[in-house]
Image (cartoon, rainbow, N blue to C red; front, side):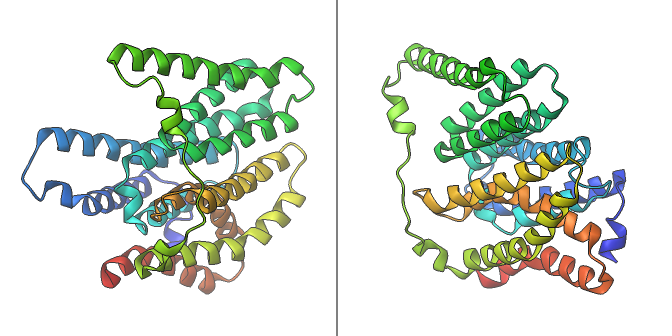
Length: 308
């Protein structure tokens, strides 16, 4: 049974998920080699694959390090399956790159709770989110997580609030120097800014609509249990629950306002969803219902190939 098999954390689980993610990624991008083999295309595709895999490892590390979930493999399995259910995300390099930056920033934000080396952590978090803003503009709204983290940990220290701004300035200066050095257009910052759009017509395609409907259903089904768990958590652990909830809300906000809605923008929502649903699977009492629910999720990516 899936729930029993992945209820522990063993190397074999990581290997299985790694193979699953690799197959999903290269199947989604097989069209890149339709015109024949190219070393440039191969190296670029492999590089993005590495970042996709790295995102899973960072998620696993962050969840375990901060006790966001118990020691099991649900979180990496769920992330792998959710991501595979929206192949368009795996076909969009800037989404994968931005996802790595967001995870690196989240890692530093969650570590605020130790109270150690706050200046370094704030600068790092601001740096990663500045880079992700350049890559995919609306992910810059994740800066709210830094502000929330500061409110929970160390908000009384005034100088802390200016450090993320210093990160933004540093990235802006270095980016401008790079553009000048390469002879690019110095107005690139204006080109980074994306428009706002509430046109959801692209979601009418069943291959996009189905996974989104499943994501939202799972989120609504599990979020109330997660909120209840946050209320029962210790005072030290409660802010971590809230930060995960804030991340999910911000990800939905990004989906709502992003200009080019292809379905790939849901990729950022999958990270908090995997954490929240893992908590649900850990504590839900219905053995057969959990098994049924996990099988539905695991089979979800295959629906794309039947519907397309």
